Amino acid sequence: MEGNAPVPRVAVVVFVINGKTVLLGKRRSTIGDSRYALPGGHLEFGESFEECAAREVKEETGIEIEKIEFLTVTNNVFLQEPKPSHYVTIFERAVLKDPLQSPQNMEPTKCHGWDWYDWNHLPEPLFGPLETMVKSGFNPFPLGET
Image 1 (tube, one colour):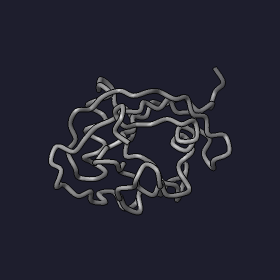
Image 2 (cartoon, one colour):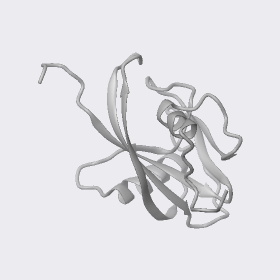
Image 3 (cartoon, rainbow, N blue to C red):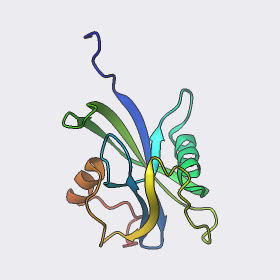
Image 4 (tube, rainbow, N blue to C red):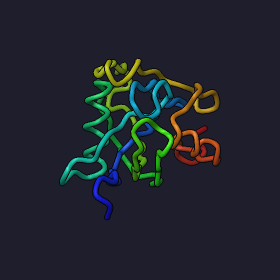
């Protein structure tokens, strides 16, 4: 391996489903700045994907989720960004523990804020990995629910 080559990292992101909407935030980051993305973050040592999903959603939005389940995985290489990186991204799906919870912006230095968006009318621009999935026809909702 080359001396200072970036090492691939694992990210867990979550489609938090509420009716026919999904939770998205506008990023403040060296990667995908000002693009809409799912809540999520780095997998920590010893964590399951589900534990990471619950922790990251709580840290970023203040909401608690349940019924967390694996959807898919993608391989994302960001060569054009100011800080080139490589992420293996685990996509999970979950619902709110309490349907009356409202997302809060718990990390304002990393996100402009969170909101619910209709899957058929998503904001733009989307963060690269999410945009690729949407364009491929991927649907995060359980069968027959959109």
